[in-house]
Image 1 (cartoon, each protein chain N blue to C red):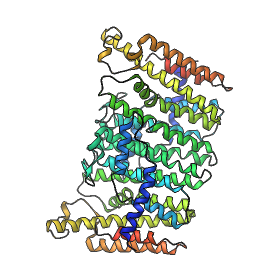
Image 2 (cartoon, rainbow over the protein chains, first blue to last red; image 1 turned 180 degrees about the vertical axis):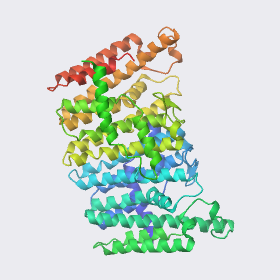
Image 3 (cartoon, rainbow over the protein chains, first blue to last red; image 1 turned 90 degrees about the horizontal axis):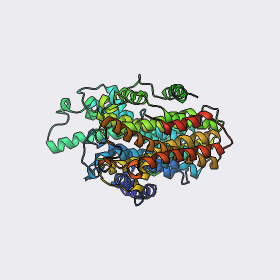
Image 4 (spheres, rainbow over the protein chains, first blue to last red; image 1 turned 120 degrees about the horizontal axis):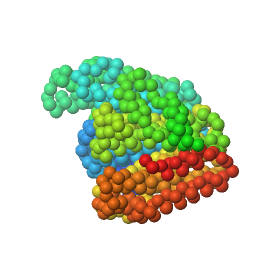
Length: 297
Length: 297
């Protein structure tokens, strides 16, 4: 299986779904914010979260369109978090994926409002899943998971601690784990758990999927750190880890590169083992999870 | 009936409910954002929206606790909108109700994140209404109304156009109506509609309540404009309307003070007439609506 090719074909499919849930920007006095929202979502990305949601949904035999508004919702939440991250008071980034960031293009006030609008619209969109299947209690649970994993006990919680830690020279391993688990991990967990729930998974199966996602999310970020260090080495000719003390605290700084690589392997193997134990099969999902953590760029 | 006294007693009661839904700020690395959220909500305010929700709920005979998470949610949404409005890129306000604004106290990054957190937590909280009464389709409709009226076709839509209009000397009456209807009106509509829905109102009754709220919301804002003009007159000794051409476009600038006063009266009477036509009775709700639009400060 050519995972890259499969992934890009699935990204196109899911983009069509996501775009169909975006607001019509041609109408209304509030046009600018609609344009800014759509610009932000259409700026690109691998669409990992909605793809993971949809593939986990299929793993459990899900077939209806009820998953679609939730897939769109998770991408909107991911996008709003990037829009607000890029703001001058946060990372102050003017470019993302080679394009002007939302506030760079539409101004700072509109960057704030477009982010707010995307977060709110994510819930407005996710709630539409109820219209597809109004008696499905799973939709309610899915929305509760979405809200929890995106909020103060999920992504925002991780982001807050990450922002505060940037000013600090040393942070504890425990705090680093907290950031890793929440900032990126929480939305990956939400994606897979919602897919499982709507696909008909039992509570016990949803818990197993949460564990799979937790391991994959952590492995994904450690791999990011490893690639950063290797990138530095190739670009700057510095030996690996030479400037650890000046670096931002990362998993690699704490554990060293060899242990980090080993951990990525172990976390991935554990995740795949849990999936293999389930009496369902989605080969692409397994390939995708391995690709996510083993990628070389 | 002493409306002021009744209102302040009901505000205390509803504050107890709202505060019970705030996060426990003692725990976790993300402590700062929890403190910033709680600080923002506890900074005061008349709690008009949750009180309107609760009184409309009672009007239709609502008795359960299912309304409570939604009352807390609407106040969180109102609060996040103030926190983001106060940011440097928006109104750049350092004080609100005599206290430092959230970003003034916690820094700009935390102001953005606390606003995001409150918006997300509003949905996390509102979804808890389902736990109280999981078979109640009204809760689901209520959440859809909350999301819609807070979003791009509601409050955020109005806010966007208001921000953009500040740079413009002249805006059309139609655009002004759009801002008035959405920026403040939408959340007042949501409050009363959600109260009605959960209280057991029929769809037709919910539509009537939406109309009541629309009229009251508009009258409330026109009254605000009138009080501003009267305040200017008293403070500056200028004749009413003397500097209309240099002023921000308001309803009073367009219609003149006498017509504006007349419109407040008519809108209020229409609203009360619709309420009187319903076969239910909540005397305090009527008194409150009249107080809201007839207040002198």
